[in-house]
Image (cartoon, rainbow over all chains, first blue to last red; front, side, top):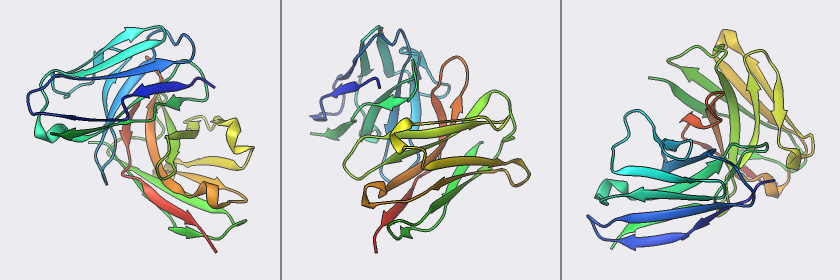
Length: 107
Length: 121
């Protein structure tokens, strides 16, 4: 199975800060990494697919980059509504696997 | 707007069968462009993909479940279901249903809110 190592596991940042989360795949997954936002008690939400494509309706302050084994997710200017857990997922091979998640809090 | 909602017992006894249903509203469940998928998250652990079913009825499962999982589709009721046999405490988790895009690559564009299932006597 492909392991997705996500870091950090949690972070605290101020409103307006740039926030960066990384995921490293245990093998080459080309561009097949996706990023989600999950708030407690709600359905997870797809933000970025295929490493860098912004899902329809998602604000442009969210972005993704990378290919191969190293991927980055960025919130360009953190807003209070962005408090959530973010996680990555690979779809290059079955079983589909996920990163451990990053809990983002406001400082 | 597509919505998915999980339903089923919140408590299952060890060695019994866990059964969950996902009701889909707002879009046809027999679309050929999507898989219907179950995912779970034990408390404090990573998400785990359980398996998927296509509109044709073809299925794929995570081998980690050792053939205990079955996913079925009921297009007339706009539902798909998960059964998991011989459960243990390790199967205690929040179970999510989701729609998985077949193209361009398998991302989950809609999810349910999740259903907590506790395995305990």
